[in-house]
Image (cartoon, rainbow, N blue to C red):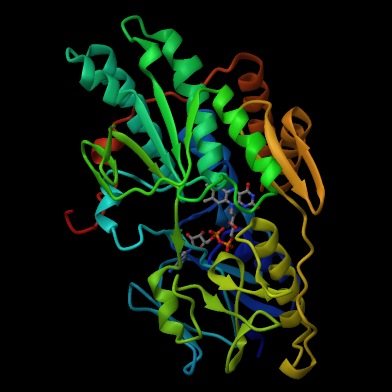
Length: 423
Ligand SMILES: Cc1cc2nc3c(=O)[nH]c(=O)nc-3n(C[C@H](O)[C@H](O)[C@H](O)COP(=O)(O)OP(=O)(O)OC[C@H]3O[C@@H](n4cnc5c(N)ncnc54)[C@H](O)[C@@H]3O)c2cc1C
């Protein structure tokens, strides 16, 4: 009988494992709670009305339809039973495995303030991006007709919390959307009152980059009209705005890009977990006591040269390559080589035509970094149609700073209801 491999998560890591096992003499089952693979690095462009959801996502079934040994299951895993070698789904079904690859990624974390989610959505999924887009567009419409000046100003104040790559990219894209693109279409708005604020608790943004690049990114954001507040900690968020200790900023638009944690079901693995719920993995990406269970990508913590690897797509993809080789060759635990991540660099976009990029000691800024970002992202995107579509949209956006997807579709009202306790 063929060995069965279960992969949980069809994101960057899980999908790569499935593709690499597509010709192996194995039965592969890929389980994801969504029916689509999402290219997360471009989520901020959906939130900023540059791209449509379909441009950065594709149905998992169609991506894998040619591979006969792979079965796709849409379902949510709620329990990993490592001793019993099976996974359990929310509909009560369970699947046994010989090998298990967990690639569930991470989710937004509010550090114990879950009630903030209602006012400050994170940016991890397509519904998140659509919710943010809708909130921004609705705010501008409301500001146009607001009778009260102070209320209009609050509606035109946008706060992004977290100065990592996601926060920086979102703040830059937001500035271009509301300052130059949308505002020229409104007649009654006092656009001089628009504020975009990026809040970072540490003393510099882009903490994972060289300090010189952090400074350059800060200058680039300021050129776009973003106020960068460093060393500032949020103490409260509600429907009126945010508090930084005694200081209050009135706003109805807060975007949370400040923290992540592993999904709760990972705790059922009972493997050495970090405080964030992410699981420590061994030199072969497997977990303690269970050499047939691998955790790859954002959900795992792999220590290399004394440091945890960053939560980046290339880490997930390279681990996927390594793990699929181990599984294909059925390498016994004692003979598995050590996984070694090869740093492919890091880049953060700061608006149209601007970026900062670091590959080892090599640094690039401005237009060349942005161009490199465009090329790399188009290459690694899944699906030829998506690549073409995104290229076209970017050229259109670059030439005219036009945001073609400024659609209010009632998503905000009908959209997700955060299941959190009231503040
Ligand atoms: C806004 C944003 C911007 C980013 N920008 C960059 C960038 O520019 N460059 C870069 O390298 N990286 C970037 N990243 C990080 C990168 O996207 C991740 O490192 C990468 O996607 C991690 O891959 P993964 O396979 O671990 O998880 P993911 O790609 O997150 O996939 C996880 C999958 O698991 C599924 N899942 C979760 N729980 C369950 C469950 N219980 N049952 C079934 N299915 C489940 C999810 O639906 C999802 O499909 C960005 C991330 C975000 C959110």
